[in-house]
Figure 1 (cartoon, rainbow, N blue to C red):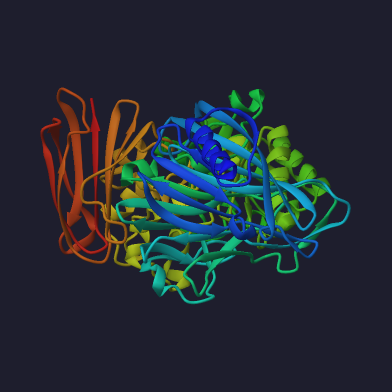
Figure 2: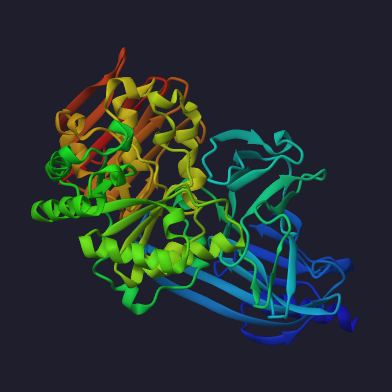
Amino acid sequence: MKSAFRKFAVGILSILGITGTFATAAPVIVTSPDGTIKTELTAEGGTLRYRILVDGKQVLAPSALGIQSDDVELGHNVTLGAVKTRDINEKYPSRGTRAEAVNHAKEATVSATAGGQSYEVDVHVGDDGVGVRLRLPAKQDRKVQADRSAWKLEGNPTLWATTLNPCYEDPYITTSLDKLKPNGAYGFPMTAQVGSVYLSLTEAALKDYGDLAVKRAVDGALEGFLHADPQGWTTNDAVTQPWRVTIIARDLTVLVNNTLVQNLNPPPTPELASAKWIVPGRAIWQWMAIGDPKFDDQHQWVDWTKEMGYEYYLVDDGWKKWKNPWESLASVCDYGKSKGVKVWVWVHSNEVKTPAARKAYFDKLVQIGAVGVKIDFPPATNRWWATWYYDTAQDAAERKLMVDFHGATKPTGMERTWPNALTREGIRGHEWQMTRYKRILDPQHDTILPFTRLLAGPGDYTPTVFESKELQGNTWSHELAQAILFTSPFLCTSGHPKDYVANPAKDVLSAVPAVWDETRVLVGSDPGEVVVRARRSGKQWFVAVINGGNASTLDIPCDFLGSGSWKASRLGDVADKGDAWDRQDGTATRTDHLRLELRPKGGFVGWFRQ
């Protein structure tokens, strides 16, 4: 009777959010500040598990949590001990779907023992989802052998998933839990619809630990494994498991505005938080258009960048083939400076792998006047490479350099700690679909990205081509909408700038910003079929629509607009011609509707300004 009362009392204390330290056997119940999300951590039968309820309904069945270390399964034969709780209520600047991130949560830290080893379990329950992790104390020659995290989704939900690719460039598809291949490897983020609730699964704060992928077990659980660290590693340091994240939302607008992954990362230093040299912006880039950059026409590329009103020009792979490459590159930076265009430079990760090589390389970039570096082709993210991302961002920050990681692992929120790491690839983008590679993206992929991969952080999709032969079934409207929908604070467009400056929609493309103040998912959105968003930057709104493989009809209210009359440019598909606009310029009010007939792989862009 005393034991039962004790468990009940602990649960009530946690639900009420009473902070402090107290002892318990199990369960530990943590409830979100708004009272709608509840997580239960238990060690019933000695097995460490957690489950999640939303509005009183279970959406994640009891799921394993653990690490195998020194031949001990830290999720088995577990005894839970003291519980310490705290409240979190903070806001901070965001460079994603909105201007400000909100971190409103309750956290519990629970002491635990298993096999003679002591450790701690952290449980974070916010109004936007749940994070759980283990933290192991420092121990001489500790062997980390395997990760035992799992997510057991309730029922057989619809999934939007991608197979594992170490550089995270496989396509997303619509499927269901029972259709995942048994023991097939899948990457994060993965989004599910459980009843009326959306859940997106991923990890946060990946550092000094291997990247996690999942496989579907016989019982349907998605079981984690360290795909790049099959033999584990040995360390003398404390081990902090990355947060195992379940983003939770009741509608698509709440889902895409989620900042849980970033919330679970430490804030930046005050100096970085207020750094004036970290400036999001748009870039012109020549790789998709012509391949290797040619030195003789670099002034022209800078001039095109200036004409578009973009902040940056990226010199990609191939510049080292120039005569006197560093001197030549310095001359490009000098010319860019004279035109008010700042230059980023591409480098292979092998050239900046070690601290000494990296610092020397970054010093050269600063010396010639570059402001950013695009680092390509890091290997699969084992424990060593996971830490390399942080060390690289830190070395760059010390030299006031911004960073774009390409060919990279998925984001896990480090851009909060290191805001100079503006973006990363880790996404199947437009570069994958170019005629010289003879590849075409599945049309559903673009309509799923905003509800999966882009929930974890910015994605350098390199959007928007207008050259006819590169459309490969897409329309100009579809291509322009990519630049608006796919968030990247370093917005690097992939088309040839001569096609931009000559296009009848140049004014619209030049107006598209790299960051947003507000994002709404509008009526008609259906992941895998069509995505419809309204995004605000200052006093202008953009509506962007990307259609999948089937023709669609939409009726979109303009009630996102404020009062009064707005200048409006509407750019839609032409029924029988991909490289053309149905453009209408006029006015609009919040009582108007956008009535659209979308062709397969088509789209629409609306630009509204006061």
